[in-house]
Amino acid sequence: MPQKHDSRRFIYTGDSCISLIHALFRQNRLNVSVTMRSSNVIKTLWADYEFLKILSVKIAELMRLDESIPVDLTINIRSAHIVP
Image 1 (cartoon, rainbow, N blue to C red):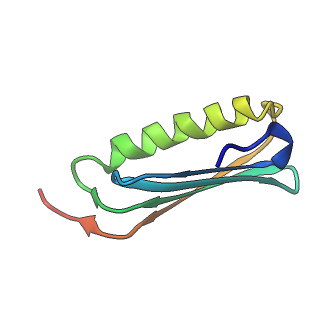
Image 2: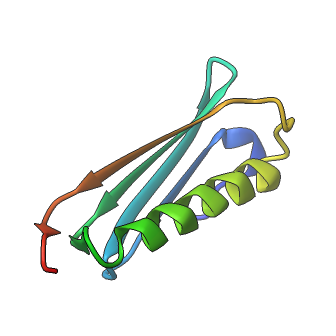
């Protein structure tokens, strides 16, 4: 559901490996919580993590938050594949 800037939240859902992103601006902090359906933690998690860091900054920009606002990124991996 589309959110207005003053709602102070953003929710994305999808059927890809990154299945849920929930961003909340609370107590002068941006909390970004991500649920990943699966990840190959040895080969691709680093790239997912870098992408999610960039995405968190972009969310803060779209919410028009000051650059000094802290961003807390929490990642939950439902199925971690450890395949060399």
